[in-house]
Image (cartoon, rainbow, N blue to C red; front, side, top):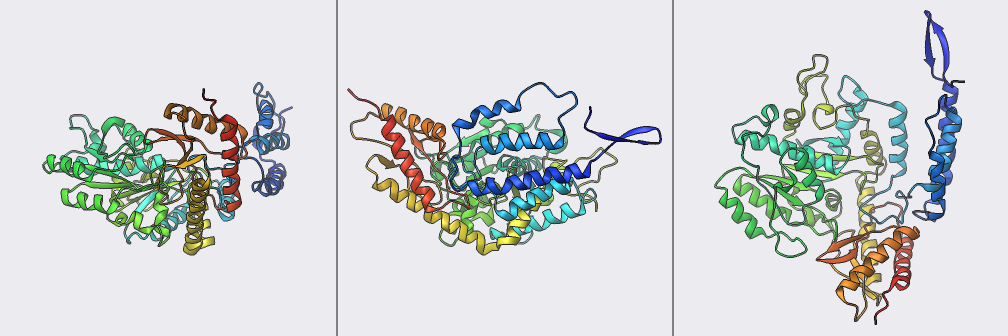
Length: 490
């Protein structure tokens, strides 16, 4: 029997919401939240023994359905057992934050209220919340009044939005309207960067039609540090033609930074657009200890960052900040639909300032967490993570079978397992084996990378729950698995 209740209205059968069932289902989620959140401090990040429960998701599409309560019960039963505890304190893979209590509650509220934050006319509440959240973010990072932006799904879309504005700016200087006519017939837009340029920036250029190979890399070593002299020589060789420079604030393998201030000086000297990819490194601005790493960001034209990293709001959350926010409406407006407002109309809004049109109210978690904890709360969190990174570095340095590969300017510690007499090729295999064992073991989570041509681990610390105990467990597990996987040499 179908689980939709129906009533007759004017001779037509209308589906009715069973409000009691809705409230009961939400109560099921609320009841599951307490035990799940309470377990995050001690539970494995991934429980291999629970993998068999995933089979409970499969099967043919139900003909009539099992009802709200049973569907939600089954999903929670499987999810709380098998979900990767990436919001917990021992997830060090990628650069993944958690969700602060205020952000988590506000994210639930975003689903409850189910606003389409396309424009002011579709939701004045969502529009105003986004306006305030963006201004608070601008202020949090010390950017001048007048900057604007848009909330997007993540740093890739933030790079896309920022570089979309850069493309529109570049077209203007070519005497072209790239928004209306595209890139056909134009020369390739010069995009210059050091070796820290992230794949998400390349993906954004790929989606914008420039191609991911558009980036010209100027690097002075095998790690990727920018060669300022070579980059400047390329700018000089362009003889005044416009270019885009990408500065990288927070390299993903070791947390290093391009010299943003120096690149800003080159951009001003040669009339280039400076974009800063600050996916997580932008948050260095919050502490006096790390703020020098991002000196010069106020001289950029655009900045991209994630919210679901160091801001600790739920997925999906990112933001693009633009010095000339009017460019957003020019680059991402939607002309040609009579029922939609334009970007400058009183009823317009953020769906016309970025790549997404229909958008959930992702401003609510950002507004709530900043309102709840403020500038000082986030400064304290960043500084605690700086301390934890230094603690991890010290633990690595004191362990005879661990070798740190880089300085620790921020929140990532890049190191590898090592031993005298083991050839480099064998060391790479050993470190890959340790990385695979970490994922399979599941007590802590961290993957491998290649840094300076060597396979390494690169745990990132950005979760508000992480403590020194979690760091110590991580090191202990790495050493245990290193001993278990150590190669047998002749």
